[in-house]
Structure formats: C-alpha cells, structure tokens
Amino acid sequence: MSLNEHSMQALSWRKLYLSRAKLKASSRTSALLSGFAMVAMVEVQLESENDYPQGLLIAFSACTTVLVAVHLFALMISTCILPNIEAVSNVHNLNSVHESPHERMHRHIELAWAFSTVIGTFLFLAEVVLLCWVKFLPLKKNPVEVTMENNSTSISPGKAAAITSTAIMVPSGIIFIIFAVHFYRSLVSHKTERVERELDVLVQLQDQLDRGDTLHPAGSHFG
Image (cartoon, rainbow, N blue to C red; front, side):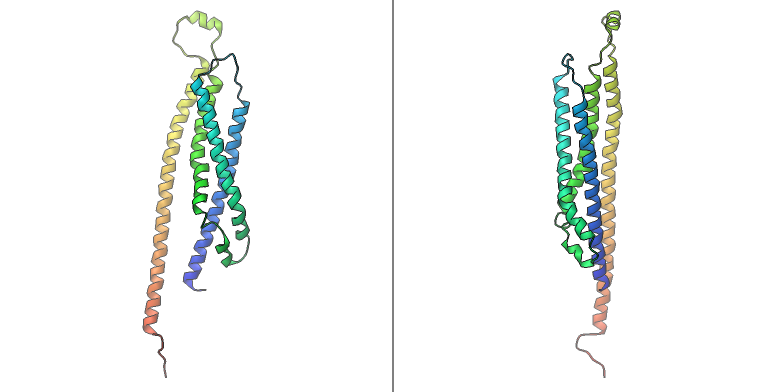
C-alpha cells in the first residue's frame, strides 16, 4: 500500500470513529434529557384551586413536547445508524471501512448531533425556567400577611423564587449560545487547517511522483 492510499485509509477510519463517537454521545444525551423532561411533566403537581396563567401552561406543555420530540428524533437516528457503524468498526480489516454508512449518512449524523447537543440542550434550559414558574408561582402569602400588608406591592415568595431562577438561567443560556458558536467556529477552523495540511501532503506526493516519472520515463531502458 502506497503512502497516499495509507493516508486515505487513515482519514476514512478517523471519520468512522468520529461518527461513532458522535452517535454514542447523542444517544446518551437524548435519552437522559428526554427522560428528565418526561419525569418533570409527570411529577409536577397542578392544583385545580390555583390560578395558573394560561400562557405559562401552554409554554410549558409546548416546550416539553418539542424537547422530547427533538431528543427522540436524535435518538432514533443514532439507534438506526450506530449498529451498522459498530459492526464495521469491530472488523479488523482496513478495507472494511468502505462498508460503513457513515459517509453517506454524514448529514443525518450531524443532524442528530445538533439536535441532541445544541437544540435539545437549549430547550432543556428553557424547560427548567418554565418548570420553576409552574412550580413556584402558585405559592402565595399567608392570609395574615396579606391582611397586614393590605395594598403592598411586594411580590409573593413563589414569584420571587421563579424570578430568581429566570435571572440565573438567562445569563447561563447566553453563555451557552456564545460557547456553542465559539466551539463551532474553532472546530471549523481546526478542520480547515487539517484539510490544508493533508492537501499539502498530497501536493508534495504528486510532485515526487511527477519528478520520478520525469527521471524514469516509461519505455526507457538501460544497456
């Protein structure tokens, strides 16, 4: 096997292992976060005597449903593609890498990765905020305290707790978005530099082959 073919084989196997790692991470993250979302929706206790804002309940149910749907979609992609990649990666044959569907399914793998780690995580942060509002907003003050304060503008403890959780989660969400954008740009820059190095190596190999053909033209013989 020539040096050029060996480099191409190494690149193909590196892509296969990277795709397998992404699918494994996506499946674990999606199963974990979707399970937490379902438990949160089931365990939250809504009392009929409490006056919940209609918009809050709609936002909470919609966010939970979309969160579970996004993670289950990523989990479905990982479950369908990962066994085929695992079967090829366990075969100790360099040429078996071409039997793996990771090249053809590259867009599906990236979609599962984005749904699980970016969109799904951001929805989970929103789910935490909405859950805090649904859980703490019904907490009112004692009747004695209300009578003493009369028309006081102070907020209830439950609303204060919900506002506090929102104030903490909003900067965290902004930091998450900034980190995601920075990580994506750094990853793209790394891939670009790696491709440029590989192209330089291929150009050098091509130059060496061209010089070899010039020194030893086809059909020439000695003696």
